Image (cartoon, rainbow, N blue to C red; front, side, top):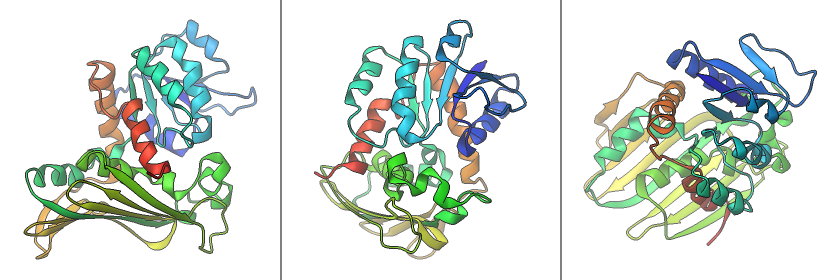
Length: 304
């Protein structure tokens, strides 16, 4: 299996490690944009998409900065290869033409949504089936300077609005799994701000209210919480369940543990790539395609 990587940052290295577990004999090619780009053992550099005319690639991973996704995806369309696109899909909403072109050409796509593969969220999805939901509260707060050890957080794309950074789009996972669990809301309201002491120009706080037919879902995201917290609270008719994403557990309002798993979020990277290779690439299954991910991006970026 031959895999093309576009963007060799920290997230790409996680994907490469996962693929090596799934397909130990996989060959990796990296599309680089400078002849001086460093060489990484086990990865062959290529310097133009035209080289794909002579290399049979089974799929491509698009994991470069978000602002570069459009041009990268556009350049890969002529080769009609399956695309594994790192979230967020885009940083702006003026990409409908590209999404439609991908759909028209029937190019297989999957936009990374690894939390859908986390055991506690899969349990919650099954648990709430046929139950009356009255309220949903989603919270994700963490400390941006801790995200990439040894790297100045102010130098990363997350800190820069013009590079597609900002907590509202960096933590789109929370909006994604809310969409996955409850479907498309009828209306969306949002508030973004930048008032913390982080000293970045990207938004460091986001607050969403998603209006559904029978309930509201509230989503709060921030970059500045030192004691990380990542939870989903679902208020049902007879009980409240809390999903602790960091601990991979679910408990109810009586503190009864309904579910727990020894797996971590890191394990989901392997699980989602296993699914992508086995079910999307080989079996043509559709799951969080570029079309669905674009709808989720609308929730993230647009007020109704």
